[in-house]
Length: 294
Image 1: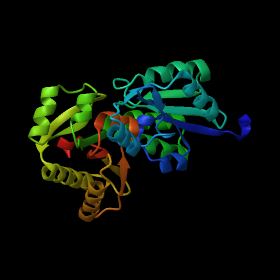
Image 2 (image 1 turned 120 degrees about the horizontal axis):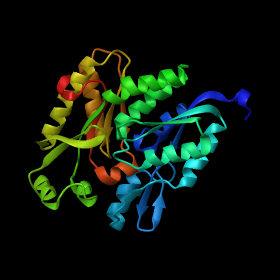
Image 3 (image 1 turned 60 degrees about the horizontal axis):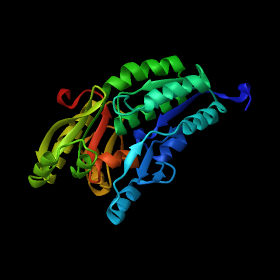
Image 4 (image 1 turned 90 degrees about the horizontal axis):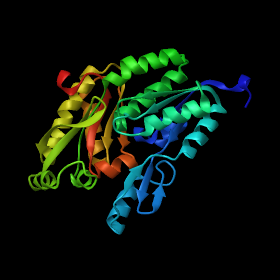
């Protein structure tokens, strides 16, 4: 494609954003996926692996998957392809404190694209990261300049991207070495549901509740505060991992208590995120004040 027929600005994100394929296709977002590794088999989210397939392999094959960074070839092929269509590109990555992908993205962007690709560490992961990607895509669609978008991403989106989510089980955090065996045992024994959030680029615990009813009550109360705060036509996400029934229940409740025209989407965690988070997750992601300030 000649320089004259190229569009001005394209968008790349890494697969940790966990946004649906329909959104990716609608806004022509290029995804660079991490690897999910089963013994000697490598599978690629958004290419040949779904969240449901992850858990199916774990149950039927007793697999213990891990995740790994994409190879240099995947970066180079993606960069070359996107620069055939766009003059410049913004590349949004998950927090560099959670993944080495940002560092590699900066390295290969300099080697291949010089100053045509701007890499941004969103200081987030999963669905708050996804909301940043979605809002960036919409700003591009609305014709904002690269400088305007980068300013809004840095000042209005990254510092205010939030999530709170409850795990369905502690087993997968134990498998990945993120909690001790004793903490896992006590949590499962007493049915404690830890609430996860993100702070300073790292996933953190934001307390816990006991039992499924308490979990849903907490999320409904939090969601009600969010819908009361958000302006008209704002987007926020009900996030889940193979927990669609509860996600629909939560979404329907939030529509019921809101008198605003809000876009409440249901997004499922992707395969790589699910390696660590496991099935049954349920939560909320939004752009705005922290939960305690709503």
